[in-house]
Image (tube, rainbow, N blue to C red):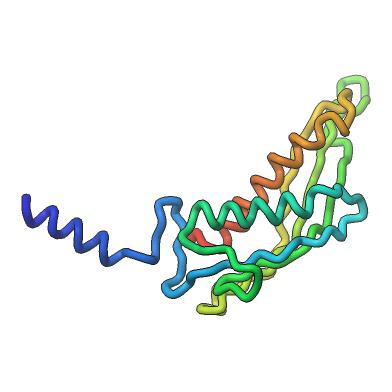
Length: 164
């Protein structure tokens, strides 16, 4: 029994700094992450989207990793822009009337790992939510945006620090 406890302690100490229980794999030596505000270059602009996206990314990295959020020049760096914010018909009823609409948000993200440039990426991410076409978009927009932003941030987080 003593050897099992000792082995478990050695393994736990040996893994210190590189793994978190969220599945994130933070490179040894990485202490900070910086997230620049995402400007909104979409043809249709939701004025709250830029700040929501930026804040959610910062919150996700600070709450799910041991990284501290830096104002600039972090060991890991995220920047990008919002490139799309579109609502379109997504399905028709049996009477050829629009029954569902779809809100799609697209972002472009550039991730820089100053400790391992092989982990860098420049990629677009896109998520959408369908909603009943009979509803006024302004009455459902905030909820749709919350869900989409959460999923986009999870996508960026997973691409940046979850090596599955």
